[in-house]
Each structure stands twice: as C-alpha cells, then as structure tokens.
Amino acid sequence: MFALVDCNNFYASCERVFNPNLNGKPVAILSNNDGCIIARSDECKALNIPMGAPIFKWDTFCKAHNVHVLSSNYPLYGDMSSRVMSILKQFTPDVEVYSIDESFLQFKGFENFNLNDYGQQIRQRVLKWTGIPTCVGIATTKGLSKVANKIARKYPNQTKGVYVIDTEYKRLKALKWLKIEDVWGIGRQLSKRLLTKGCKTALDFANLPEDWVKANFSVVEARLHRDLNGVPTLTLEEYNQPKKAIATTRSFDYTYSDINYIKERVATFAVTCAEKLRKQHSSCHTIIVFLKSDKHKKEQPQYSKSVAVHLPYATNSSLIISNTAVNTAVQIFKKGIQYKKAGVMVTGLVPTDNYQLNIFENENPKHQPLMQTIDKINSKYHSNKIKLANQDLQRTWKMRQERLSPRYTTNFKDIIVVK
Image 1 (cartoon, rainbow, N blue to C red):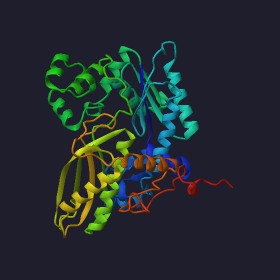
Image 2: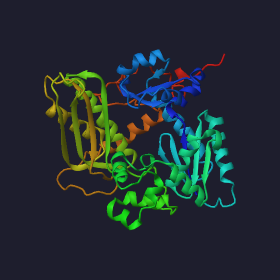
Image 3: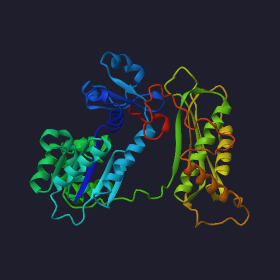
Image 4: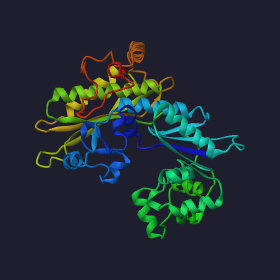
C-alpha cells in the first residue's frame, strides 16, 4: 500500500503556526520579489483570487477584503518541511519526498494494520509536533493514493483527513468522481486531447484499452493508466538521485542596466551551481549563461540571450565556473537594456571521481582541497561566510520582500520570546 501525505495550504500554515492571529483569515503568499500570488489559504480561494495573480492588480482588492499578503519566507518553509518529513520517516522507512509539502510513503508488511487509524496517527503527530495540518490518502498504488488524498482534502468532515481506497468499489467510485483535468500527471494539453476522446473522468481514462494507451501516449501516461487500474507500476523514487543538470536563476528585485551588478549576480548564481555540484559529487562539462529584459515592460527595448560554453575538462570548482560564467555574461551583455532576470546552468554532468581526463589541460590541483575547506566552513556555520571577492558579501539573494515575516526557526534574532 502507498500513502500520499500532503500538507494543507503549506506556506500559509507555516505562517499560522507562529502567528495564530492568521487562523481563519484569508492569507496569500507572494513569489520572489513580491510579484504574484503563489499560495492561498482556503479563505483566500473562497474570494476567487486566482493563482498567479499579479499583486499590483489585486492589492486594492486584498486590502478591501482584509487579505493578509506576505512575502515568501523560504528559510522558514524549508525548515518546517524538513521537520514534517522527519516525522513521516518514523512511520515507515520507505519515503519519497515528492515536493516541499508532499511525500509518498510505502507500507510493506502492514497487512494486519488498520491503515485508516495509522493515517490518523500520522496526521495527529505531525499536527502536534509542528502545527501543520495534513491530509492522508492511502491506496494500492501511487496514482490511486493521489486520488484518495484529493477525497480526504475535499471532504474533511466525512473522512477526518484520511481516506483509504482498499476495495474495487471504492476505486471505481473515486475515479468516477475525479475529473480528467484533476488527475495527477494529466496536464492541460493532454486533458483536452482526452476530452476529445470522450474521457471526462479518471474512470473514463482508466477504462481505455491498455494497448491503445501504449500506442497513443508516452510511457508516463501508460504507467499512470496501469496505476489507476490498481496495478502497482509507479515505484518510490530516490530523493537524492543525482541531477542531470543544475540551474540557478533569479528575477531581480528591480531592473538593472549596470554591468557590475549583472556580473555580481551571475557570479553568485555560478557559485551556487558549483556548490550543488559538489554536494552531489558531480562535475560539469558545459556552462550556460542567460540574460533577459523585463518582458512585461513592452515600452522598453526587449532582449534575451543565452550562450553555452564547453569546458576542456570537467570541474566543480567555484573559481572556474564563476570566472567562466562572468566572462560569458560580459560577452552577451548589451548596453541600454534594462535586465530583469539572469541565470546560470551547468550540464554535461559526470561523477567527480570517475571521468575522462584531458592530456593537455586539467584543473589546478589546489582547487579541490580549497573547495572542500570552504564547503566545510560554510556547512559548519550554516551560512555562506566565505565567498568569492566578486560576490556581494552582505546578501546572497537580493529580492524585494517588503512583507516578510520573521524567520522563526532559522534565525536566533527571530526566535519567539515567551514572557
């Protein structure tokens, strides 16, 4: 059996844990640089505020309806997520962290357990230890556990936050209830395509002939089709599986045309990519750098450019990656353009301890012990204490966060004091 544990309105719930005055009130969380709404409480959804709504268009509406609008507090959300996932691992060793607020659990050898009661234990412990409300969906496959979770979330009074699909009757009833566009893994375009074939519900999709699905859809949809029919096909994935490409991209708090600002940002993005490479014990062969203007400001000149640089040898050195990225940014920089976004991506990844050496060019042997020392110090003090000279020594991520709540669990200065 599989379970999907999903935190309810996770970002808003994290804020409510430390600010109970927000309970029962509409809460909206903004994206980077306070651009648009990326998370909403149920009370906020009831006001028909759409996901992705630009705050400058909805600010007056939010004030009129007493909506509490907050900047994204990612250090807080990440720490609370880690606490929730740690609790889930107490119930089974087989856990796949699917996203910041969702995890799949697999129950092997739980045949004699009452899984509904077990799901309630999970909810109660997470709520008691972190203050985060959750819903639990349990079924014979991952795909069906997603469906069960939606039912638990939709009908909290009847299910008490836990729903188990353990019979054929429950499976058919659940799939008949779920619209095709709400099925996990069915995107907007695919749902339109299925609607033309008469598939209005998840049950319609599950009833399609397996051979026809294999012939007309990708292997992902074919596996989902088998999962929805109760045949376990989708397995738990390794959370710490090495990535095939790593990217660090950010929108700026404002638009900038200063090359020195652009160089500092690109250097910081490159160093972050290098740190991620070393964390998963990988090195890269290719570095991609891009710059973009603000597409929303139509009256200004528009510009977008990306360049890929192939290195003569694989590396994860912050010095080499940063230097290459900055030089590339200077090459593609164009005067007179107001830049809003930049990014660095590293690809062509290979294991650091097993890759082809170059007979003519290789990395300076002093770089690896230097990088290990920097990573050790930064890890020990949980902050980027050591940076390259071309980085901003005061701030790593320069974002507009005018409505930011305190970092209650990750900053000593913001810890709540009980009087």
